[in-house]
Each structure stands twice: as structure tokens, then as C-alpha cells.
Amino acid sequence: MSIAILANHRASSVWKKVIQEKLPNTPVAIFNESTTALDAEFLVCWKPENEQLKAFSNLKVIQSLGAGVDHIFDGNEIADNVKVVRLIDEQLTTDMWEYTLAATMGYLKDFAKYKRQESYTYWDRRHYKTIPETTVSILGLGQIGGYVAKQFAKLGFKVQGWSNSPKKIRKVKTFAGLEQLPKLLKKTDVLINILPLTSSTKGILNHDLLSQLPKGAYLINVGRGGHLVENDLIPLIDSGQLSGATLDVFEKEPLPKNHLFWNHRKIQVTPHVASMTNVKSTVNQVVENYLRMKNGRELLNEVSPQKGY
Ligand code: GLV
Image (cartoon, rainbow, N blue to C red; front, side, top):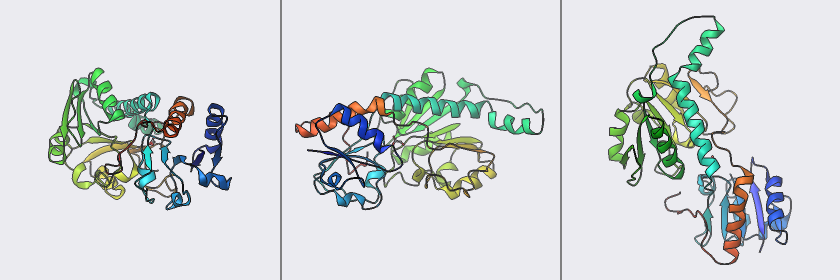
């Protein structure tokens, strides 16, 4: 049994080193560095290119190096006998909470506007909303979204959450299914997207949905770039329907240099850093899944290929 690493844009050699330290007798090879990688049963994987997974003939398990698995299914056909697992990590979850809180507070306290005013020494005071006056709505109430919703509620925000199937979370008003979405949107000040990217959530942040928010609402996208119809966003901001957006994920990453989002004064761009996989805190989960595969045991955090999460 052996392990291969195919991690585009991630530190393959670091992963190889930490896995090898924990499993000194197991062959661990990096795709493209050694042809033996192609014989592996267990693949540690991030953003494979289209059809790249075809080259592996013995695969039993694909371990995503993130919470999302869309990058594995997108452009690759996964055989029925291959299991796909994702990372669920406390650190990833709390990092996401910290990022969404920072973006929300930046919006509430108008930091971007005052930064601009600073550049022309302009003194203009603007009314602000307090935490108890603010309704934050979270799209996606899975491991991460559910935690984020709870934390916002603990701080005293009014919190709503939406998911595919009904969920109950203390102090969070929950909605489920597309038919309930307009009710949530109607009362939202800050919309935070943490949905998984699937065929049914692709393009969900579009003109029609964002127009149902109250005028001046704010968007935070930490899900995937594919959730947002990028061309719809700037007109909605320029017309005042949205007061701005913080975007951490994009259709194409890195965000192309000539993309209009870079220079828009009401869009805060961050380079997919809301929650970055921490090798130290997640390597044990990867190794545990390899051992479970080897011993024919149930895997940790297996996803449903039908649902895509
Ligand atoms: C990051 O985007 C992840 O899926 O963990």
C-alpha cells in the first residue's frame, strides 16, 4: 500500500515530509516526481487538473487537503469504488469565524471608507449600526457555517442561517430549501456565503438573489468563487443595492491582474486566506484515514459524491 501527493498550489514536499515522519515504512511519492506515485491507493489531493486523476489506476481513497471537495469532482470522473474524504478541523473552522467576524466588523465600522477619507484628509462622520441592530445571515450551516452562526449569535448579532436540509441551532433562525430563501434575504444586513460548491449552488449569488436583500446590504463570500456570478456584482454595488463586498474566493485564482474587483473601492479582495489548511493540525487526520483504508475501517469525513459535500 502506498500514498501519493498531488497538491497543485500547495506545499507537496511539506506534506510528504510530515506524512513520511508518521508512517516511516509506507512509500509516499509526489505526483510528477516519481512514476511510483501512480500506483498509490491513497491520494492526498488539492486542485487536480482536468482528467489528471485518470493516471492513477489503483486508487481507493482521495483525501482532500481542504474542507471543500468541489476541486476534486470538477473536471475529474471519480469511479464508484473510490471514496472521497475531506478535512474537518477545529482550526479551519475557528479561522473562518475570525475572518467573517473581521469582515463584518470592518463593514459595520466603515473602515474602508475612513481609509479612503484619510487619503484626502477628509473629516466626515457617518452613522453606524451596532451589533444588536445587525442581522447576519449565513448560507450553509455545515460544520463550519453552523459554528460561525453560533459564534455570531453569542456576540449578540441577530443571526439567520440557511441550508439545504433543516437545521436547529440555538439562537439562530434557520431556513431550509430554496423556497424559504427569500424570507431570510429580506431581513439581512450581512450575507455570508459558506456553502459547498455543487451543481445546485453554483452561481447562487446572482443578480436575482442579491436584489432580494435590503438596499445597502453587505456580501461576504468565503465559499467558492463559483458561487458568485462575478459580472453581476459591480452593477449591484454601483447602484447602491449592495454597500460593498469582501471576497476571499474567485472563479479564477489567483485573481487575474486585470480583474475589475481589484480596484473597486467598495470591494475588499483577499487571496483565499479566510481559513488555510494547517499541516500540523490536520496531518493526523490524513494519516488516520490512510490507516483506516488499509485496515478496511470506516473513513473519517467521507463525502457523498451525489451531494458533493
Ligand atoms: C479551502 O478553501 C478549503 O476547502 O479548505
